[in-house]
Image 1 (cartoon, rainbow, N blue to C red):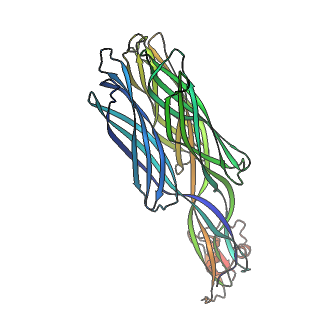
Image 2 (image 1 turned 180 degrees about the horizontal axis):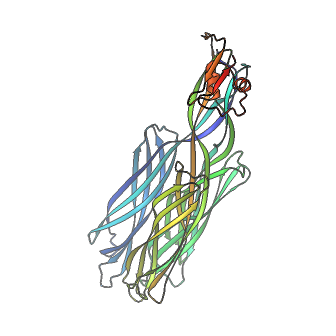
Image 3 (image 1 turned 120 degrees about the vertical axis):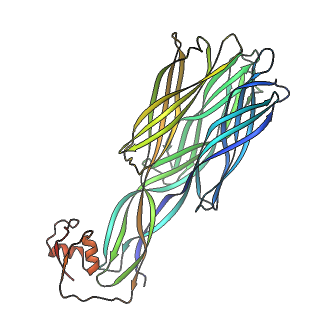
Length: 507
């Protein structure tokens, strides 16, 4: 017979599967007739755009493209600098056990390297390698018993927990559009490189909406008609709204940006300008701290109770913390001399991370690829250097069992050649750490009364405490109560009994 109970609902965001994978896409590319032959490549880079992702039964699929820019030295009398731009389409399917269609996919796709091999003067082989961090999650409404109403002598072993319950999630699509003006003396010939990154990310709560704001930092290198290499860096404001009923300022917003498409072209309407359009997908999960009382165990001295229990993995603590790592170094580079620096590619890499109590220790490397050349010549060179760094970040609640996701944004990069041929490096890295502490708990879904009950009859029970005993399991075994045992044995602290101690058990 079912027991009448009152229930509570908890929305949990569970990680169903997590994988790290690699993807590679390669393609032969023929140099357009309007461009000169390739002598050798100088630098290759690109931007990953994921325009479609899908979770299916047992697998996930991502479709996207890599927008590639190749800077090369032309095989002509002037040895000019030229560029190639193409897109490499990719479709990647990854097997995931236990995932079902309709679940959520969080992905972090990082372009590891773009390689370009010259096959002949008119043909190159382009290979793009990507690191893929994939996480499949499920939002589940869990209903469990919080009170037993009709069994008057029911004994309950209860526990109060503060958990992060998922309030809701949403996705919006926005565009970062702008016309970038360049110097009036520059007649644009070719784009040599385009980089885009999201910085200055902010989140605000307002009227059942999550307001997301950021700046798309666009860095471009271009070639002029008179064979000069120029650079420009611009910030494009990005703003969007995500509907989220009942959201408050106390809630935690986990916001992620993803580039779905990128368009860069000379502006045909206005001279000396470049049109930029980036399509962005912004996703947001909102968590609220919810205090719940769960029944871990129960019994009745008068009737036989049986119950159905379910194990769930809930988020006991979730935090998102930002901190700044400032790197200041001087690197001696005699070969640059008094030449001009056109560009420095900055790539931070975490080599190792150690999670201690309330802090995280990072060991990393800052890879700098310096593009430089003489101001009066078209010749251009590149040099790579690696700067090791250590960063100690305070993170309240961090333990060795915590799940840590770290994202790094470059908020400042400044490079100056000093008279002594040293390169002064100033780089600020903004670490955003997403921490989750999970807790496995058992909740009771339903309770029933068994009609038959086999009882052992006792006239007097004297019990000696054994290792692992608690007052609760002793009381449950003999169908007594914790309160009665504590009273008759003058026990002040119900959570403290000693092995070998003699107890009188009232029944």
